[in-house]
Every structure is written in structure tokens, then in C-alpha cells.
Length: 284
Ligand code: G3H
Ligand code: 13P
Ligand code: ZN
Image (cartoon, rainbow, N blue to C red; front, top):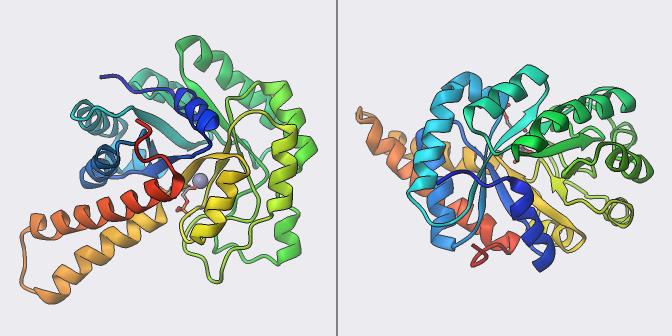
């Protein structure tokens, strides 16, 4: 079974008003957890690998694990590059069998971001891959900046309209108040900005940094047009906490399976909760 381009999944999400979960994977147990959780929930799912994941596991291992996991289930599975920044890396992903890529030119000036996104699209679209781009800067929670400095990095709605028109990108990641990693306080999302972006941009909107965002805020973002929700940190937390508790309770345990098995179960639970929250259960 081959991977599905994310645009196909996001189109159905758009028609029926839900969001598809995009979950980051770095190792076999997490790949299995993502696909098994989606299969139990009868939900489409996006497996995504960051540059860090590719560096850690190797691109061939990521693709082989994802392929094996996808072929063991009936639901549609996409394999997506998360936050790709270089053109050569995009080509490696295309060659290796990814069904979709993100080109993150958000640190570049607007016209350079447009040019890079276009260059990726020219390669990806004829081969049937989807492309996600980013406009505005989704930082990390560790970034030490004030609220007004942060707001200055949010996506400008008019710029988003121009960007999509110029690039014809398939989906757009926006900065509306979320950040990658664990939040220090409660994140406040700029829903007015999201509404404005939505009124000007017709492609599906992607929410990054979604771990730790309260459920009601995620639900509201989905009701306002978010169709892909990225989750990494919440899986890491569940996975590591479960593994740690095994080790804390059994300091002499030396069988990795006794630690990684329960960690995989914990990851399945949190991913199932997210899938239900996003409204994609039963949509496969
Ligand atoms: O968007 C960032 C993801 O959480 C990936 O993080 O670069 O540590 O793999 P990573
Ligand atoms: P979190 O780690 O904050 O869930 O963000 C994930 C993400 O946006 C991946 O691109
Ligand atoms: Zn992200």
C-alpha cells in the first residue's frame, strides 16, 4: 500500500469540517503507535518526520518503518517531511517515497519564501506529492521574546493571501500564537487573525506546536478552518513518562522491551485522544 498525499486527506477534512492529525515519529515504537491508534479510531493519519528524525533514524529506516506500518492497516496513511528547509533534502524525500513535503521558508524574506516554495512545487506536483509551506514564524517556547515581539511574527492575513496566490501551495502553516515544545503558561491563540486568514485563503490551514494547547482552543481552531494539526511533544511526554515509570519501579530492569512496550501503549492512548478531539475518528 502506498502513502497518500496529504492534500487528498485535507480535502475530505475540508468537506466534512474536521482536522487530520499529523504526528511526529522518530523510532519504530512511535511509528507503530501512530498507525495503530489511527487504525483503532478508523481515522486517516499523517506520519511526519522532521530533519531531526531523519538524522536520528536515517531516511531509509523512516520510510521502511512507515511503509511496513501502513501496509499492516486499512486506513489511509501519508508520509510527510516536517519543516524541510533545503531543496536537496526535499529531493531526497521525493526519491525515498514520501507522499508529501513541507518546505519551511518562514525565516526567509517573503519573496524568497515564495521562490523556494515554487521551486519545490515545480518538482513535487508533477510527481503527485503535496506541498505545505509556512508563513509567519512559529517559534519554540524557549524563545525568550515578549508578547508584542511575538505578535510581530504572526502571519499577516493579506500576506497569506498573496503567498498562496503566487505559490499555489496545497496547505499553509500559520503563526497565530502556538509554539513548538512545552508551554510555560497557557497559549493564547489569535482567533480573529485565523478568521481573517481563512476568509482570504482557500487552502487548508495547518496548526503547528499543538501539544499543550487546551482542547477547547484546538476545537475552535478546527471550527475556523484548521485542517491539519501537528503533535509531537505530547507523544514524547507520554512515551518517556511511561518508560521512566517502568524504570523507577524496576531499577534492575534491563530488557528494553519491558520499557518500550508500555511506552508504545501510552503513545497509542494519547494519539487516540487527539484523533477524537480532531474529529477524524470514523473518517477513514
Ligand atoms: O516541529 C518540530 C518537531 O517537534 C520536530 O522536532 O526537530 O526535535 O525532531 P525535532
Ligand atoms: P509540538 O511538539 O509542540 O506538538 O509541535 C509539533 C509540530 O508542530 C511539528 O511540526
Ligand atoms: Zn512544526
